[in-house]
Amino acid sequence: MKIFNAIFSCFLATFFLSGCAPTRTWISSPEFQSADNATYSARFTPLRGSGQFIGEFRLEVKNKTRQPLEIDWNSTRYLYNQGPSGRFAFEGITEKNINNPPSDVVPPEGTLQKIISPVNLIAWRRGPGFIDQPAFSAGPVPEGQSGILLVVRQNGKEIREKMVVSIKVKVE
Figure (cartoon, one colour):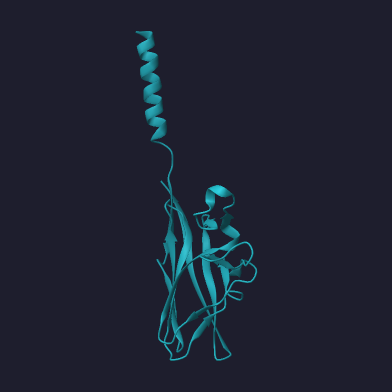
């Protein structure tokens, strides 16, 4: 009987302790931020990866004009608590071109959608086991204000727009 009680007590302890682990969920307020001017409209949306954390953002830029629009990734910055905090990484970025990312061109009256991650929050994937995978993985965005200072050029004119959301981590 003592053995049964000991086993049953261990089972109960394991059951209750496993159910007590807190879960963290990242929440954005507002759910997205947008900017609009005569040249383009843009939308900056935090995304949750396979976990509950926000590690990436979707940037959508719609060119309203009949001239191409260049997104200058060298000048565009990740904003954390209103201050610049590095560049963004995205598909096609490697350790070789991270310091000089190529610009994107949005065609006349066209739209560009891109998934971007703050460079200072990524982990590089190296080694033979990662050949068929992206060059990096995104880590969680910290609590606070996260945003983008988007730098766009058209016909030699630079247009800057800030879009910022507030990120909170809810613990349940």
